[in-house]
Amino acid sequence: MDGNTDSAQSDWGPFGRPLFDDPQARRLSRVGVVDIGSNSVRLVVFDGAARSPAYFYNEKIMCGLGAGMPETGRLNPEGKARALSALLRFQTLARGMNLPPLTAVATAAMRDAEDGPAFRAEIENATGLKIWVIDGEEEARLSAQGVLLGWPGADGVVCDIGGSSMELAEVTGGQVGKRMSSQLGPLRFKDLEGGKKAREKHLRRIIGGLAEDISGTGKRFFLVGGSWRAIARVDMERRGYPLHVLHEYRMDLAATRDTLAFLETADLEALRSACGISSARMSLVPYAAEVLAELLDTFEPSEIAISSYGIREGLLYEQMPQGLRDRDPLIEACRFAEAKDARLPGFGKKLYRFVLPLFPGASDARLRIVRAACLLHDVSWRAHPDYRAETCFDNATRANLGGLDHGERIYLGLALLHRYRNKREGTRFEDFLDLLPLEDQQEAEMLGKAMRFGSMLWMSDAASEGATLDWDPEAGLLRLHLTAEAAPLYGEVAEARFNALARAIGADKTEVETED
Image (cartoon, rainbow, N blue to C red; front, top):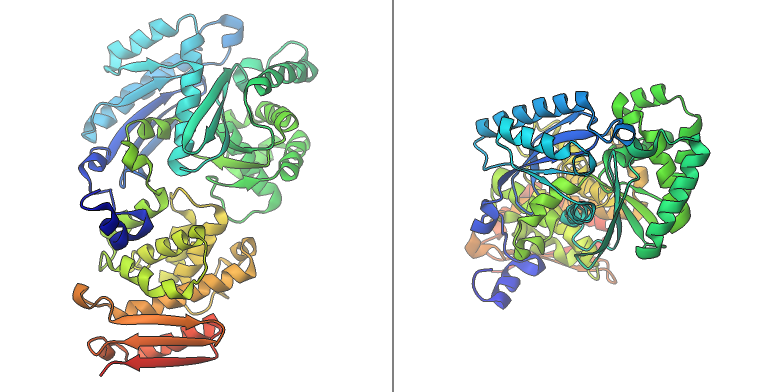
């Protein structure tokens, strides 16, 4: 951080100066990683604010490298051909994007197969890719780091399931603790002799052994992996859940067990079609469900959180300096969006200061969402005016943002909707509002109308404090103070918006003070 730390904090607040334009962040602005798993091979190219990157490119091929390996000890021949073709394509794409060398890792299938070393050499000779075959503990560590990319303060157990293995890792205080690997990928045990009873016994023995070393009982479980995400998507379908964003989707034990029971009797093909799950993935879901059922019985987690971030994001996190890791991913992403898309970049910080008196006693968790809203308040200005409010809600609730749960997404979206629209009734988002308590809906409306009013008061840097708010809840008084320089900004439209804010906050009276 440049300059004196204290002065920087007083200028920028608790989140510090933006880092996305720092040289250490810029060198991570476009990074490509390849994940060669037992079931799929994927290329992800990250771009944007380095602390909370956008997915510039994301392509997955379901190769099934680990299919049949328990019987043969060798990689699936068809899967090898498909993987090699995919990797040749990925290298060609990377050259076309002018990327630095791709980082490529291979996991359980490649490390355990008899012909894994030979196939690794074949890939390197054909593509020039340097393949890093990592062991189970390293896979667990990288997956946990991916979770930390989105949840810097994550506390619990990361559980990453692939085609041929399942990894567990403890996370607390931004650090990865003990980690373990097991051969519990669905491709590995689905054909176990003896059927479901034999699988249950097998799972109970292995997961029981993991529980002796991993301290996870009663903690939050962060689930990483395509099979877990597919189960979460089924849970959404069963519940009629309106927000189809898997990242940070939460399930309690009772709901998860209900979904696992539902899967046992459901028409899987109809469910696959309804949920948009691939046939290859759906074929593994019943076996992954058996693993999850045993995990629930053994660890009884306090809550389940789905993470779309895993080993690939962990590889990006690995390259971050500690100063960048420590930043808030939500705030950095919003700052980047403001710098890129807002009409007046930097005004979000002033707007946050302007609305802050309306939130006396608010928690730090709530204030960071308020700050995020202020940073994003103007990034959708190019949308058609008739649809701008809906565009704002869509962007907030469906954007690739880390560091906020679904309730916070909806609060953020609702605040931005009210930045452009007085009422939320009659929008196509009314089903979403049931996920947010009425009190929070009303507060988000108040924030939106405060931003709507505050956006009328664009000022030069020298006069950025020309308008200030004061809210006295006990007296029911909302007061606006204007300097002489700012007074001309308080015209008819601004007055109407100030009165709308007063109604939203429940003020009994208002005052406007203007300096001579």
